[in-house]
Amino acid sequence: MAFQSPVIVQSVRSTFPKAELWLPHISGGSNEAADSQINGIIHSAAQHLIAEQGTLEDPHAEMQGYFELKNNQKDVLSLSLFNYAYTGGAHGLTLQQSLTFKLTTGRSYTLAELFKPGSNYIVKLSALVTAQIRARDISTLSPFKAIRPDQDYYVADRTLVLYFALYELTPYAFGFPYFPISVYDIEDMINENGPLGPMVVNY
Image 1 (cartoon, one colour):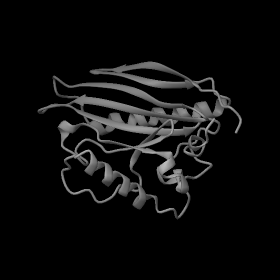
Image 2 (cartoon, helix red, strand yellow):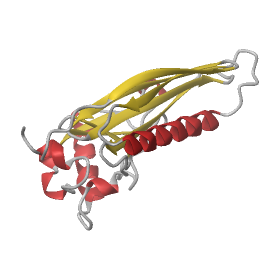
Image 3 (cartoon, helix red, strand yellow):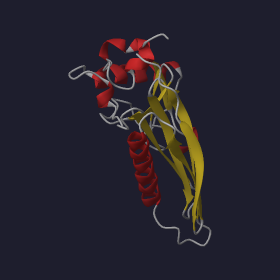
Image 4 (cartoon, rainbow, N blue to C red):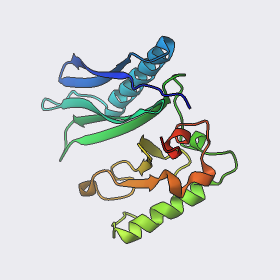
């Protein structure tokens, strides 16, 4: 595989009444159209998080948005968008949405698209999550059975990180529960042409 240089990721500030958002803006990739497509998907995802939080009509309401860069190498960009909003009540709520792209094409990938068709990735990944819940003695709101087919994830170097929303698996105080899985534990299922393919290669 030819070397693919990282893209430039800049923080862009966006504000509206009671809200301040810092969003990533991509540039400097080998394909300008792909950069533009990635920025469009990021913008749409940020708008979706804003809409999910609901109204800011409460006098004390506020919203803050930020992001974390997880991977920017080997033609793969993976990042997480966060949106915190207080709209009244006992405490605010933080939403997270992660996006993973191939930089040369601008294509974003669902969890299923990381794996070969028919690989039964749900069963394998669910077993790995179950093992971590037991090993880490994580208290769940109800017995864990399986991940969703479209479970939230991001890529961090040679690791696939699955995670759950607040209240989805654990009590609010636990925060976001993350489950890192080495690509070498799932290598036989990986779609070589997807974002995890390059992570298995040692170079």
